[in-house]
Length: 230
Image 1 (cartoon, rainbow, N blue to C red):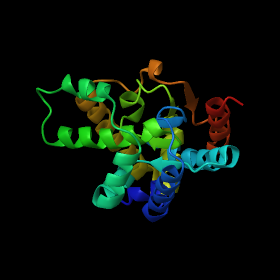
Image 2: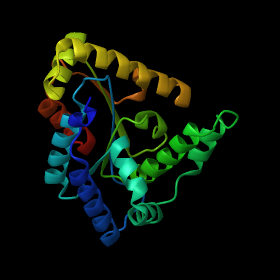
Image 3: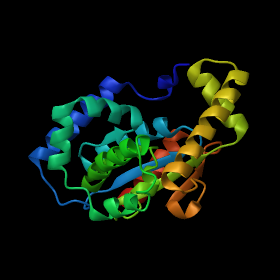
């Protein structure tokens, strides 16, 4: 099933990341002085539509470039050696607390977990520099110690999520239900095994949204005002 339909085109987002990187080189800044936004969501909620709306609002109001990161984009960046090395060397070293954080899992940290640690190092470096919107990847948990990060979670009723997935993927409601059940279990298992945290822990977030009652436009506007303080 083409789950990529749920996310914006990779080519477009990679171009945005490259532009973000280019401008950050032109105007270097002190880490953690510009905000970063992270999203956690139940599978089927509209995090990407919200992130896209939010990016447009923040760029309009700050007159600066923002970029959206997720697992699929970071996988592409991994293959773009020049871009990857440039970003990691230019946008600040990873903080010492990140090594300490992962050291607590050192006895178990093998293969897939090593790769996840590397992924975290990449997006944490970007998060420290600011003007980044990170969707998923356990980002609200991993970036908790960063003072410039704002964390938000989206949840919704089963009925809402089924309708949303069925509409966005062009599948039946029964197929949507099966997809939601499978993907949510995988996400919960991932966060439990890799980070030993529950995404339902509300203490992780600045604000939590009921997607049934809030459109992507409304959530993006509220988040922009919260992050920018106006």
